[in-house]
Length: 248
Image (cartoon, rainbow, N blue to C red; front, side, top):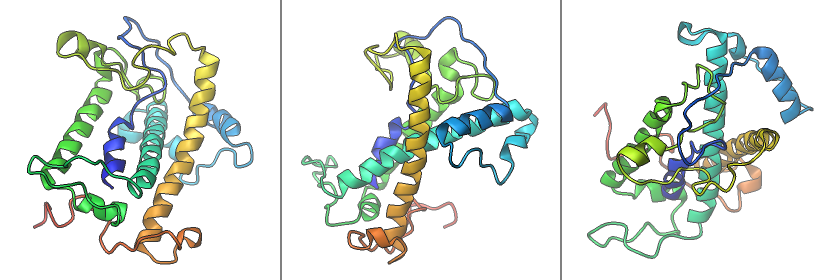
């Protein structure tokens, strides 16, 4: 899923970044009661649903609040990536870039292929470039951009750090979200409402992208997609299938 993975490079972009790094931040913490209150706002019908009791776990001995911070950040991040993947799947099923994919002049994979097969056709070097950028974005997130607390230590859920310090010290680069600062005066109420909408959309997108993958891999597994599914014989969970493996 070439385009989906390219789009997922910005899957960690948050709804609360600013054009430059602020000098001070506010540390937040959440409890299971906060999750229950949030769940009632996200989906009053389902409410709080935690069959594995993850909200009561203690990951890596960091305590329940740190564990909840990890879980919230993880869900928001996966939801964002799923939204990009879902849109990417639809786009690359119908369109590909008109220019060459490689310096040798090879074109992008044909849209006659399923998105999964298109990804398989991407050269190994290009895949490593994509994963290198993803790794850099993850590292910047883990470091809080040099000014934010870690998401397990009080950062706002879903907040991706500004590139302000990198921009000032290394190279000009736009922030992933709101690069021109159009939303810098957005109220906290609006931010909260938009984040709730983003979480719900992310949950739906996770179901959607896996629906596409399942329909292509297992014929008839998603009846609503049977007529548009393109059979795929590979394994969508092995991104380097046939190109690289630690075990061969």
